[in-house]
Amino acid sequence: MDMKENQAAAMPAGAVDMEKLEKLAEVAVKIGLDLQKGQELVLTAPLAAMPLVRLITKHAYLAGGGLVTTFYNDEATTLMRYQHAEDSTFDRAAGWLYKGMAEAYANGSARLAISGDNPMLLSSQDPDKVARANRAMSTAYKPALEKISNFEINWNIVSYPNPSWARQMFPDLDETAAVKKLADAIFAASRVDVADPVGAWKAHNAKLHERSAWLNGQNFASLHFKGPGTDLTVGLADGHEWHGGASVAKNGVTCNPNIPTEEVFTTPHAHRVEGHASSTKPLSHQGTLIDNIHVRFEGGRIVEAKASRGEEVLKKVLQTDEGASRLGEVALVPHSSPISASGLLFYNTLFDENAACHIALGQCYSKCFVDGANLTKDEIAAKGGNSSLIHIDWMIGSGDIDIDGIKPDGSRVPVMREGEWA
Image (cartoon, rainbow, N blue to C red; front, side, top):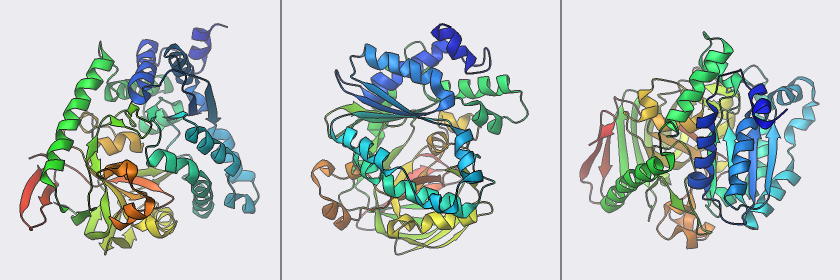
């Protein structure tokens, strides 16, 4: 069996345009990572994404990269744990694996993750076991996550149209049609359905950099979000810096961490968030759907949290550690973004966060400070940066949301009106 036959066997026949999938692999390596000559790559992916893994591996070696090491996860065996494992095992994680990843990143490896797991995989499992397993994994993963969240390495996330994900998005279609529709949506959002994807990404990055530069020039002290179910003032960290699109990691490599991306983002002040906010899209977290979130902040901390679905999981997430109930990111996305305009709900944060303005619980990005690469953890904390085992984005933007930037003297500047840049 040759490679093309093997790739085709892993997906419904004719469902995925292999030419566009190859363009996505090339963009992931050249734009997402800018993989360097001799640089090793740690790749994680769902088992179903093997066709994309192989194409990324090919382009990594064509780019002169070093050893590519892939770790797969499998939905069926994940479910077997919840169905058959001893209760005590849910407080454990493969710490040896994450220590190895952290060591790889410390030695200069790049990181690429392929997303695409079934967003509802664990929705019928015991929420307590889900929360315990997530906490154990987050604790074990922290040494590796810090290398990523601190942008010590070049890293990237792309997605593959896993059939189980496609069936969740398009339950009324047969599997082949569902996978094709999801694949086409991924290709469009990832800007690989054009003649020159690399050029398209360079132009898109330039626009995001213009937005970031304008926001940095304004030097706002806080942002005020106002709309249905939301009246929220997000104080911004001292010395915060806005970013969007491609960024330079501490290893000197310019990478696009998220493909797709439509956001410009920065670090809130962990103790200066007041008011209440409602989600405008469901949050798919570790196989559980959390919908109609409504939270209230006092002194930067969530003191009240509700959800019409997944509330128990949400509350357990907020109890992960002290920083889990505080914000680590605020991001601005126009309501007219291509992902929003598609009208699709992806049940996948990588996509849904790029359809709407959003906030993130947990860990901040050290890069979102002036001279962030040279700040210590204590210095970041003193400026208002949050620390946590988690980083979970959820959407609060829509076509009904207005945002004002508030300057240190209290004056206001319109930033967004009805979800669009003002």
